[in-house]
Image 1 (cartoon, rainbow, N blue to C red):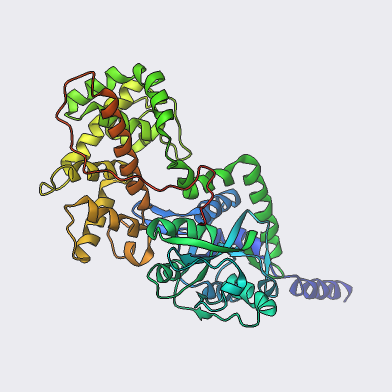
Image 2: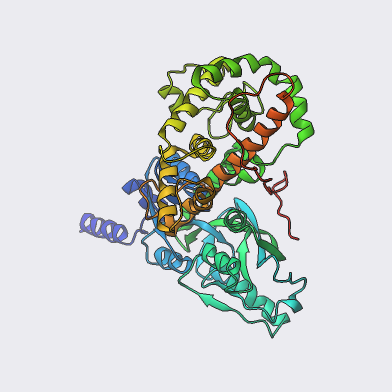
Length: 473
């Protein structure tokens, strides 16, 4: 009887044991399910597969746990919390702000980023310089976003403040409505604004509503804390190792990457750096039928004529060739200046050949430059967008308007090659054209005019300051 009693008691204790924690479930099943936002600031699927700052981080976290990652993208912020509370996802990585309302239902991990929150208006409509000047403007914001709670708190001090909440739009859609003058103001976080202002250059910051608002991953309360603790360890380690900085630079570094170097600096580099490589550019130009000054302008945009240059994404050398491009060109050492310059010339010539025969100069060269930067397949997608819009895909002026749309979900989701940071090739081409024009001016008196690509008045590019800040005038 004593033995039977012990067996029964042991069985009873076994049935009363605690259920496995979320971390234990993840490790047992070998799968980490993450809900995220379908957005360039979180997660997108392009020609080369999934990408985005949240994806890069959570993929590394899953690898550290030794499990497979399953992403659950949603369009609306309002869909995130139900996914978590229902158990469909173990955690959320969606650029979520930490708010008091959300704390009622969720636990937040270690903040891995901070953002600023702005009122956004359109240049020329009158900049609101105080909250009192906002009260008579039409305001629309994304429903269920942290901006709802922020405006609700402001309404206590400004009872006349009113706004509309829309559950069927993204932050990008509302900034487009501001740019089209459909609404006066919206609220946006700095990463979203910094991307969208490339599409809509008239967008400006009216007022800062919050500075350094913390962003974190979210977890269900209770047994979600076990996964939260491991995630905190990972993020703190990622911060110390520099991984967070590299991810940020990859997706937001274009605000610094495309900072235009002034003419005086360019001339100094022309005098000090270019002489080491000029003969290589000239020979490569003759071999591949490209003005050497255009090749040199590409090299300056890519690396400032530094043979040992390396980017956070792994491209390297004077012409900043990717590993895949180097393999295609049979280049063993991308850091070798001659290999890089001749490889870059060959690759640029190849892009020029791929441009449609119906495209004349100088548009042909500008399209080839864009393809050198973003990939030819994305140029094909942009040409499709121009055709859909009734434009002329054989002109650069129409193509450069379409390229930024490749970063907008409503467009790239309909195209064969998916998401691309389409504003980058537009800035890239304008910068190369500027450097090319300076080089032609600097060399005009030392050699007979060559058969060069005519320039159709390259216009100056308005770029963000070098520190990544945004002009709010």
